[in-house]
Image (tube, rainbow, N blue to C red):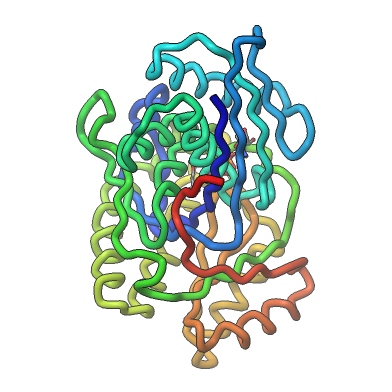
Length: 324
Ligand code: ADP
Ligand code: DP6
Ligand code: CO
């Protein structure tokens, strides 16, 4: 009744922002991501008759109450699925900054879903695992798969058609994703809270919903054609549009710090000098830069010269969930 799984994080190219069902984690819009090879979570789950409550250890410490409650609620869902009342010890290690806009919730809940399902011998296929992981953190449904992944929002109220699908494997198209650390502190507003507030209060949210599916189609076409320029343009614009919707929320949500601006301007200047590089930003201050592998070293070195950039981690498309 124990198992260990590894899941990589993913970076959204077309963002998931807003839920139509909070309990089932059903999104308002479809989204698209690349699973990364250098940021991941390893989670061990052990169910036992000798426990009278769940325990969640994160990075060698007892997790906070709010972190633990999310995990325990997720275990409740999986217990229901498996028809068991057993409690579990969950031990997780994030090789990614937690709650800093590097998608720790994606790798965290994908690894937890996979390990818990295996520990209970549920024998889920990838689609079922994606549906399960989604109910821990929406973005986690995409981390089940490697490479370029689409999460179709689905139409059903029970969420059975809201899961991720692989568009290209990690071997099909290599691009470079340079993750720039400008601030490692935990965000003040979680993704969950941020998207809820935006959907409820931002007058710009309808503009987001009216255009995001079109952005997704354009991004998918660029991926199909391996057209890096077109992909970069739409990805950068979609990220800025998501942040614009949250600036309109009440109270407004601003994840950017001065270093965020410094990296964005730097990338726009690189383009003026003829290098094809684009940025995207999730719910946090840190920036991910997309470029072609042949420009990776130049872009990497130029990013490291920026005063606010503490570190740059080079990533490429990575694999889906695995078991250890
Ligand atoms: P991020 O940008 O890191 O995804 P979120 O606000 O979406 O930020 O989610 C962060 C939260 O995800 C954490 O506060 C914690 O509740 C949860 N989380 C992070 N890592 C793990 C993990 N390894 N296992 C379970 N839950 C995790
Ligand atoms: C900006 O999946 O972290 O990174 O479903 O509430 O856990 P919950 O939120 P989460 O939201 C991710 C938001 C995003 C965009 C994306 O990854 O698509
Ligand atoms: Co997250």
